[in-house]
Length: 381
Image 1 (tube, helix red, strand yellow):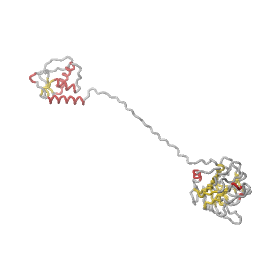
Image 2: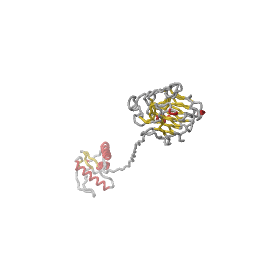
Image 3: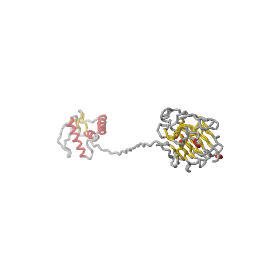
Image 4: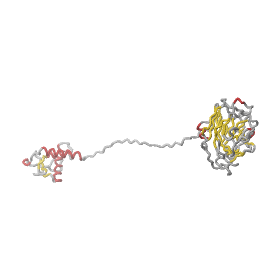
């Protein structure tokens, strides 16, 4: 080979340098002219780095090349050994891998999935059961009124000067109140209510004096809270709730008459269902009384107090009977206390309805609430 250069004192053929520069990406190979251009690049490297020096400069120019190349004498050329050639090739490969004179822009497609989470705030469930199903009478005694709020327009009549007084919360004119003088409320049957095999009662009550039986047929010391009876003669009674049992006058009881008695006979008092509950005077309680297919249930403050059975599947019901609030027929066995939130249904109440109607009370509660204190203004009228 006639064309060599000296690298650090050692002659290197141009072809080796050419291979190195091609591998390093200095000059692309497109034909012989590119090889001449390569030689010019070598000359540029020689002059710029001074690490490669040449001898015997000749002024021959190669077309297309801006720099001369040089011809060296054969007597100073020697072959590179295998180790040096391998080293030059390795350097060229390393440079070719680490340098890129023609960078390319690479486009990629990235799919992005966006998940949107919405928080739905649902309203709290409505735990209030249906309290209108089967409702035939509702006396809330609000705003100083005796009016029926069941929607059936039952006519309520105040008898013997019946008045409204304080309720369990201390609100005036919000509960029926009586001091034992025979004032009652009556609700005549306009065809809106009837009972046979099932009915339910719910009411809040408070008594101020201890009920008693004087003996000898004198029942004036008993206190009837709620009843369904012929108000004029006492015949054809369906039920009585309160303190009406002469054998246990201080204990709350629920009495139901059998259907075979008819409407022209006096009330049978043998079916007194006594749960053994004696209230504290001046304290408010909720009572729920249910009759359903021979069985009578009594709940005090939402808890079942007694279950008893009568001898027939249905009870007596007479169209000329009236609901009496605060007494028995002819205003006997008068109440000395107060009654509020009176409800009557023509069906048996469910457990949820019972729980809701007694929600403000606790079993065997003796706590006195605002407006209930003896000796104060509330609860004494």
